[in-house]
Amino acid sequence: MWWQIALVLAPLVLFAAAFLWKGRIGHVAAPPDRALAGIAYALRMSMHRVEERSGSLMVRLGSSTAVKVIARPSGDGADLF
Image 1 (spheres, rainbow, N blue to C red):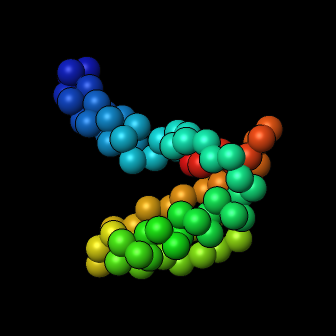
Image 2 (cartoon, one colour):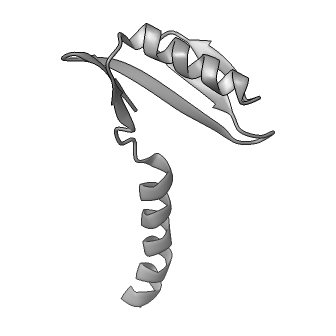
């Protein structure tokens, strides 16, 4: 009985870890607004649809896929999540 529950819960935990985990992507030596503006410009030149919001970008990769990029101030620049 317990192994049936484990067979259901294990994929759910892996799915949650893969798609809900928000780790740091990188660090940029620029203020958050300038970092996001530079990223948005580069992605638009790569023909991606980018929507700018306060403190974040929403990048459309397809008709049903989007990635949210968040910039937060850190010591000497911005951390990207």
